[in-house]
Amino acid sequence: MAAVTAPGRRRRLELILERDGPTCVWCGCEVDTPLVQATTEHVVPRLKGGPSWLENEVAACKRCNGRRGHRNLVDWADECDGSGWTVDRHRLVRVLESLDARIAEQGGQRKARPYIRSQLRRLRRQIS
Image (cartoon, rainbow, N blue to C red; front, side, top):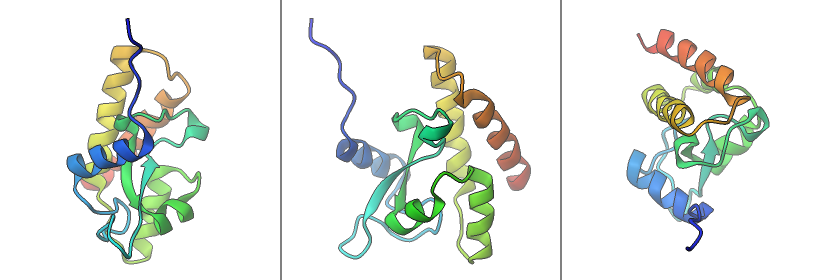
């Protein structure tokens, strides 16, 4: 019986771009072009227990990914707003809901659960 392997980083990025479109979740610029390198951005940082699953990743330009660092999701989105960028909060909610559902189905990721729920509450308040 062959082991099932998760897709590599490049393949995950391709799948994310197909799922969400070729824009940075934070600043809205078109990514994966000759001028703007696309990266996979962990919505729940690995430091906070976020897994490297498609359900926890979005496309971001290299600049935004690097500038966010390990800052929490909603605080960084608010900083981006202050820079005049248009953060795709609906995409972030959709990704967090998908991640929460996968964790509920698969189990584990205890460290990430409280972070996911608190960020979802804050995002939902902002977009309602």
